[in-house]
Image: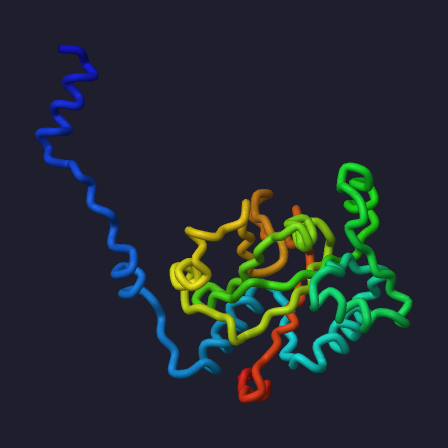
Length: 230
């Protein structure tokens, strides 16, 4: 009997087949946090994101474009890369129209303007798929209209987040967004600006991605922004 046959014989005697699937639902159910209401859950999400230097602005569907313009001026942005085929991208472009801040778009393959993309773009703007309260995270769902590089390359990342689309945990988000059945080529989980501690264990921001992250958190009408601040 060969070594291979010996190994398989021992495995069969160990009664390891069929392998039982892990009880992920039960596991995550036991360790999932719980909050008294959606306001407390949002406060936890915001606290976790702000702990790693994320800038959060509580907004509404009506005023987020105005706050986008305000943020862009305060940061001295000369241009913003927008996804003009999305509804939010179009609203952002309208808000910037007479501001002197140039609207940039993906008008050609990245190979043809890679140098300008990496060197000259001040900020990238995207939407988000959902939020994850436990870890203070946003899920980005890249599409041809909003490629992954839109959020990862520019030094400033600005995004809209509709706060009524938030899950307690990553597992809940996977189930709610049916990721196993309908996932794109990649999903981006973001909890703040880029950071690393590779050099002398010193935490540095903006080392290999955005140095600033701005979230325009769009609240439903029944939530008062004042209730979200301690």
